[in-house]
Length: 324
Ligand code: SF4
Ligand SMILES: [Zn+2]
Image 1 (cartoon, helix red, strand yellow):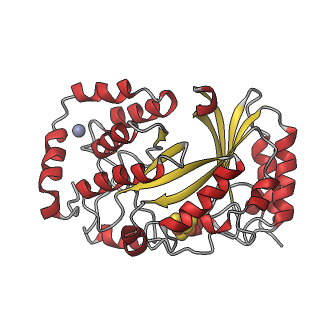
Image 2: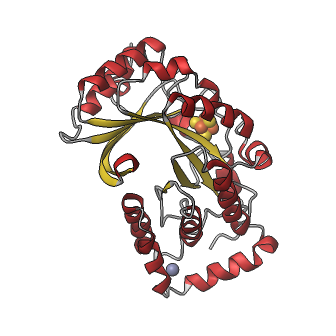
């Protein structure tokens, strides 16, 4: 018999998101459904498989039903994620997907639906199933436009060409793409990591309406955790995130960055004293898209900024392994 835990989502929460189509922040609800989990499970920084379970398709519908009980009663963006790919039939069957669509369709407050998937599962037929809301966005964890980094350091197993093929299907269909870029995969120095996400933004901004910058954090029981424990990895500085966001925003895209675990040693962090202020500024930028919010941080004279500058300057030599 299925466990009662499987009837509830991994988590669900309310927040605000920038709604590009109307250039304003509106409410959002994120739902993380527990499914059989990502079939790939081999990315070096990913521990999401720990959220998977022996879940039935009926459980998945119960999880969403449970989450939507707390939906906002005004217009909102609904983000339905799994710890894998929403469009992988092994996680969510086409029958379940259609039932989910019916649940979404009933709630007229939902202005936009965002789902996340690996590119190999994207097809016009599956997108057609989701055609119930005015705005549909497909999020893809590309991580970097650099095939070498994605394949050797992240172990993601799909290429930039695979991403481009999938994105073309989405764009031709009339839906938008959110591309996730990963700031500081393992074996990439702090400076190279900033350069990599900026360069990647150049490659993806024509196809993406949103770029979401994921600040790498150290999840339990991952290859990355092993490196981190042996002092071969330090999560990115929040100053690096601010730098990268400001640069990426010069392109015509919405730039988001959810600073998960910010200020903690396993998450993106500075010195400890300024982390909260920088984290809050990034969160405010997410919903306003106002670069002024981040530019104001330039006036902040926390001592660690000098350390960060030195890290960037000597980073090739340090090889991104300092633990500060
Ligand atoms: S990062 Fe995505 S593709 Fe890679 S193992 Fe995790 S869920 Fe799967
Ligand atoms: Zn500081």
